[in-house]
Length: 304
Image 1 (tube, rainbow, N blue to C red):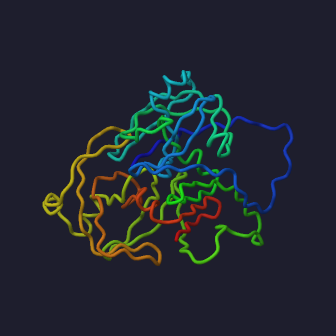
Image 2: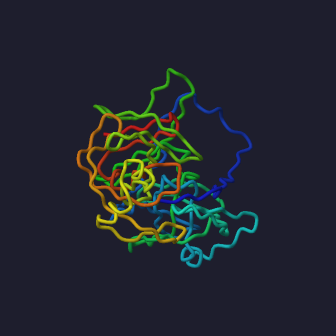
Image 3: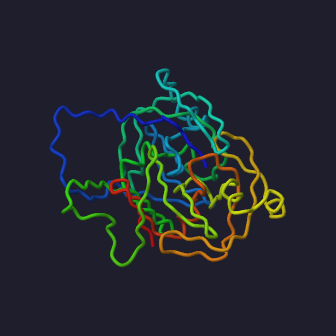
């Protein structure tokens, strides 16, 4: 769906002395209320004590604050940092950053995780739900990758876990009972990919909770033998990413989608240009139909 490059939140809390980190740890950092509004997955946050919502976007390297959020919270510019932003059309551009004195995930009622001061890119979201508190940005891997993420969209929960695996004797994630599928993940600047197979052709899938649906790249569809003329016969329209450049999409009937040991017969998937290091985006509709644990600590995906 999008990429934000180098917009890393600077967590500036430094302790004079710190206790030795535990060899093994798996503890809940915070349990966040998770909303699903038409495929937009969002959590509550406070920015300098102001309430807001932000999209949870595992497909973005960095976080983003909208101009509306900058104005509403009177956030000052950060002249020392700028961010290279790149959307699905592959056209990068440099955007300004703002300074945040105090960013917290969650609410006092549900529980909060204080992230402290930092810097964040300013950009426009291509779409967002009209909810209260309003959506004023997105959270990317610069924030999320410090934790393991347990998505439970049906029960409206996103749990951030502190996981440290300093020994082979440590209990590995997930903290589940029963059965689940395990897959190795490849990490590129905080963004996570896994292998998949579609109609017999193998490719790379980006785990992208910020995309509202499965999106097969047009290039991958061409490698499957589909032509532009064939795709033009499918229903579709126009869409855009954070770069706000419109691109065409089509809904196409495929035969067989395989991910790990799971099989999806006769899926209807969106086909659109994806100028990225992935052949398909596994979007929020996939997150909504599974219980998912993204383990940045172990480099594995667990889902059921």
